[in-house]
Length: 319
Image (cartoon, rainbow, N blue to C red; front, side, top):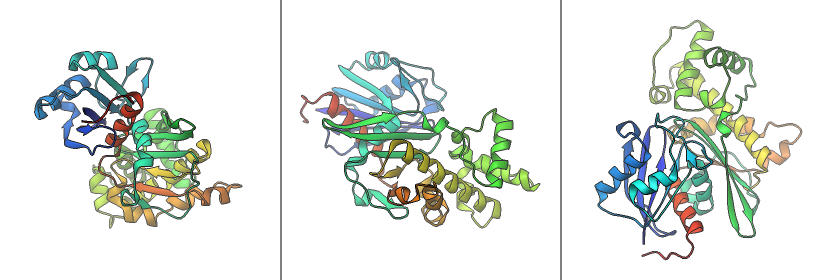
């Protein structure tokens, strides 16, 4: 039995087919969200491409899913309901979940080849896990073990305050607050946030402004402000990831997702990320024991969406 799974972000919607909970995602296609008026239309376009009508679907979206509605925070799509999408596609079963809920569900399925360690630490088997990921936005979720299996804890942790700790970070946060009305972490710890950090640092130094994309910044680290922006990005992320670990008691590990970090692995590993993660007096020893790892699996949220369907439809057998 074929299932439809998706990982829908603010920029691209990735769809795939899986044959049951242990199936490897196939027919993976990425569709720009701007090319479609909504989730139902994007999913229908994908299904027309592959010529398959799955029995069930789980679509993971980058935004809150509450009270029977979902909203992609950075896609420009209107709010929708899973029932409306299900009816549009003519499926018997369809779920819409938060993308980081799907990412959290995938964590126990990831192997050594899917992860790059960032610092030391040893996982406490059976303890909660957490995932934090900067991309188009900033996602946060937890995963808690229970007698009946893993239970995800989705939320909007990317909307917390920026964990500024240095004078330069505080100055950047002050400029952010003046521009946006709040010093929200996602405004700095995201693709647009990296570009914003670089712009703020230039303003602080009285340097000429440059209109650079996140990729241009991360690929030209010989530029001093680019380098500082990337390293400040990693340091702030370390503080935020540490806050998440403390809040959730994530002694099983904190995992880093999103599309930005795999491009700057060397900088991340050599940055203040881990020092800021551990620097939580008086619980430094507690924090040092928690491992942090970068996810390099090509489609973990697709795997997590299949896990969610397996939980919801345990009576269904793969084809």
